[in-house]
Length: 319
Image (cartoon, rainbow, N blue to C red; front, side):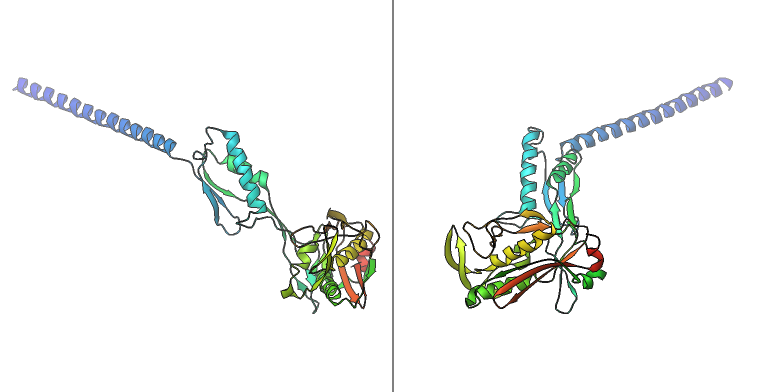
């Protein structure tokens, strides 16, 4: 009886050991499977192409999605960078098919009712920063926001009503008011630049402020200078407005961003004191480098056009 018991005990012990071994084998096997799965997942992830979405920070719209590997980043990194730079430039300045992100400032103005009419801020796409952001996302992918710099006009709306108190500079030129088309064009362009608010650091663009010179907008045929010759065109005469503006703002020490002369002497201002403009072509642009905002006034009186630069009494005392 004792032997039988001892035998049974031995069998039980063996079973326990076997069961324990089976548990150990199962645990080891599970770890091996998990490890294999992890390796397989990493291998799959490594094979999957990394995708980058470039998005507009304001609209959250995807501007472009691309895969660096498909653009052969791993084959020729320098060529990849050059392609990114070319793309960023087109995105900023625009192409024949699409408008760019860069936008010149359209300055605010005072309306006939004395209220502020808002223009548009200056927008700059930082091309170099965009390229670096995309390159930084090459390995892991994800989203990249366009680095946009938005500059609003810098002035205090509460002081707008006092900006006309002091005349800082004034300039007048003369024309033949009997030449109807030319006189009308000068009148329209003068009205367009009248009551423009020039904030601190703001850049004035004549073409952006005056806009297209078209028949639909009231502009008429008149003589204008093209390639050193006088020819008839819609909007002839608006350069007298821009040239009068130049001679006024030149007295307050603005900084010129873009400024072109006519190809021949125009007569109504001294030689070298003119500013030619053309829609879609040469522009007259200058920046207010003073520490105070100013107001541009322009008006036509018979056969003359006068442009003034004004500011408040308080601001004038700081200049």
